[in-house]
Amino acid sequence: MLKLPSPLALQLGDGQLLRWQQAVPVTLRVLHGRVWVTRPGDPDDHFLDAGAALRLAPGGGVLIGAEGAAQIAIEAERPAWRAALRRWITPTPHHTAPAPPPCARWPRAAARRPARAPRRRAPAHPGR
Image 1 (cartoon, rainbow, N blue to C red):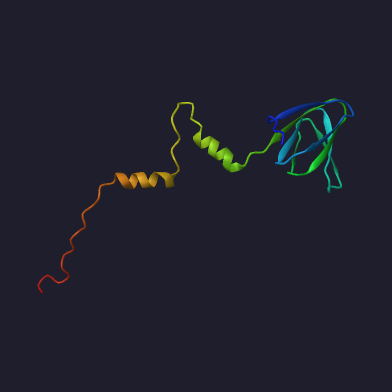
Image 2 (image 1 turned 90 degrees about the horizontal axis):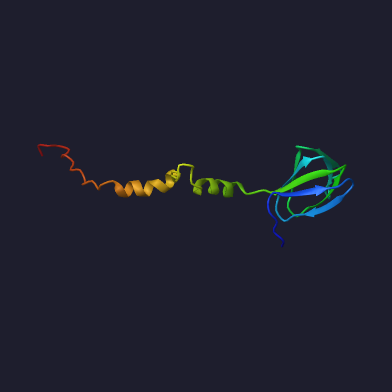
């Protein structure tokens, strides 16, 4: 499988067609001009002007046509967990590591706490 940079910017001439097939979900964004998109199984053509975007499902091939000169960007979507992980491990501008999630701090906090001696209980009935 060919891996391309994301986002991938493409220039289309008037009337030029582009057949696109992807293995992962992508977002098609029109940077300049106007394009139309035909998807298999979808009875409608989608006309997109500059600034518009359309999500394309994985495995589906689409046909993209330009009405006049157009520039498009195709960007692979990242899973939400991957973006959250990247934010968590990326250092902040002050070069300090972000605080770990609460569940990761708990074992260390418990390890720092000194062990307590068991309390002696007073007899329930002192005179017996």
